[in-house]
Length: 114
Image (cartoon, rainbow, N blue to C red; front, side, top):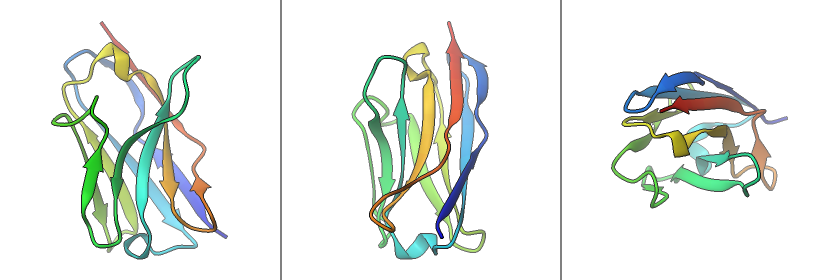
């Protein structure tokens, strides 16, 4: 059974930084594509960043140059480093694994104040 548990969300002022972490069980993060999505109130869930099995990464246009996805194979975790946060980044952030079709965490709230 795949389980993804996010942590690290919170309230931060614009221009600040946060680091989200996703702890995985039931899968090996280096063996599947992993990613982060977000959903703001009244909006569709959107891709933030992905990391492939091979380690290549890509990010959504709105976060390129500010957010970085990484993987710690020893800890079996995936992280999202978010810098220069903006109020528009406010959303619930979800960890995703391309396993069992699609697996999702429960989400963690990120709120950026202006």
